[in-house]
Length: 373
Image (cartoon, rainbow, N blue to C red):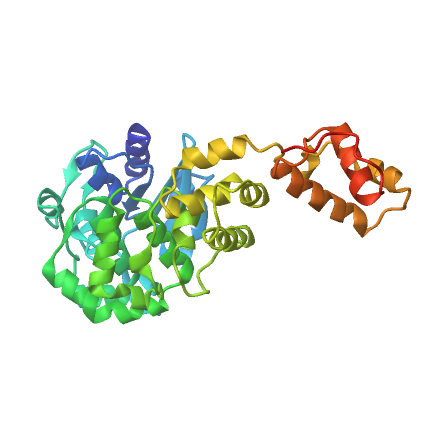
C-alpha cells in the first residue's frame, strides 16, 4: 500500500500538480500502527484527477473528492479546499477550491491528523502535529468551540482517538466539548453508531466510556444506561446491554438478536431447552454479559441430543400414518412434545422409541419400551 500511495502522488505530480498523503495514514505511520485508509490531498480538481485516472469515479464531487482504484487499492483524493458553510453542525454545503496545502490543513479536525507525506516519503508538518503525537495530545486545529460547532462529529472522533490511541485530550478542547455537546443531537444516528462501534470494540474501551460519562455525553447520545454497558468482542452483545434511542440503525436481524439476547439473559443459559430454543450464539452473548464462560455453554450445547426439529428421527408423514389423519396442527403439537421430552432425556432420539411413545401417549397403545429415567 505504501509504494502504491507514493506512485499515485508521482502520477499526479507528473501532470504538473502537487499531491500529498494526509491525515490518519501518516499519523499511524509515525506511531507504527497498521492503517488501510489512504487519503490524498491535491490542488488538482476532481475533473483533472479523472483525466489522470480515467477509471476513477466521483461519489461526492460537490465536496471535492474522487475515488481512485489503483493496484486494487481504494484511494480517496480530495482537492485543497475551504469549507465555507456547514449544515446541521456537520455537512459542508459550500466549499471553495484553493491552491494552498496549509490552508487546506487548517480546516481539518485535530493537529495529529494534519501531517503530510510527499512522493519521496518525507513527512511535512506545518501545524506541529508531530509534537502533539509525541506528547499524546489531541487538540483541534482551529478554535475548539468553532471546530466542534461546524462539525460536531469531531466530538466523537476526539473520544475515539482518546480511546484507540490512548492519548489525552487538551483541556481547552475538552472544555469546548462541554460547550458544544448539544450539537450531537444533529448528527445522524448512523454516524454516531459508527464512531461508538469503534470505541466499544477497542481494547481500551473503558477509558473512552468513562470519558463519555464524565462529560455527560451519554445524554446527548441518548444512551440511557451507559454505566451498565457489558463490553465484549461482539458488538450485538454490547448494544444488547444498552438502553438506547430507537432511532439508532439496526437491521431486522440485529434487532431480533438483541431482543432474544435480552429475553435469554433472564434465563439459565446452560439449560438444554433454552440452548435448543435460542441456539449457541444468543446464549453465548447473554452468558458473556452475565460472566458465564463461553466454553461451558458450547460444551453443554454440543451434548444436546437434538439441535433442531429436523434432527428428530420421525417424519411428519410417519406421524400422519400413525394417527391415520390428514395434515393438521396436531403434527406440530406432537413435535413440540417430542422436543421437550427428548431434551429432558425422557425419550431417546430413536425412531422405534419415538413411535412407541406416540402410540402409548396419543393412541392408547401399550408402550413397548422401558421408560427412561
